[in-house]
Length: 200
Image 1 (tube, rainbow, N blue to C red):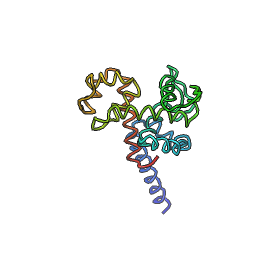
Image 2: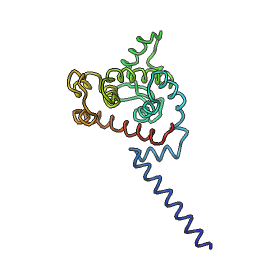
Image 3: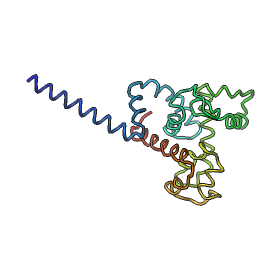
C-alpha cells in the first residue's frame, strides 16, 4: 500500500512538472515564467494599475502588461542604454511629447520612475501608435515596431506610406533590425500567453 501511494505521488509530481514545463515553453520565456511562479508578487504587483491605465487609453491590459514584461521585467527603476526609464522604458523625448500633449505642467523626466506616470506616458504613446495603424487588420505588430524603433522605420517596413494593408508575417519579414523583430515577436508571444491564461 505504501509503495502504491509513493508511486501515485511520484506520478502526480511528474505530471505537474511536465505541465509546468509545457506552459513555460509555450510562454515564450520559460525562465521568466518560472520566476513568475516562484515570485508571483513581483509579476502581478502592477496589475491593477496597468489595467486602469490601459482601459483609460482603450488598450487591452494584457498587451500593456506584455510590453512592461518585455521592457523592464516589472522593474520600475530600470534605466535603458539610451536613457529610457521605468516600467515601459519611456524615452525622455516621448515623455516630453506626452506631457506637452496632455498638458502636464512642470514635467520632470525622472518622474518616469514613478509607476503610474510611466504607465500613463508609455500607454499614451502605444495608443497613438495603434491609431497610426488602425487601418491594418491587426495593428499590434505595427504599433509595437513603432514603439520600439520609431514611426518612420515602421512605415518603411510596411511599404513607405503604410496605407496598404499587409499581413503580420510580411511586415515582420521586412523588419531589417533583428532586435526590433525579436522585440515584436516576444511581446506578441507573451500577449498571447496572457490571453490563453485568461487573467493578469
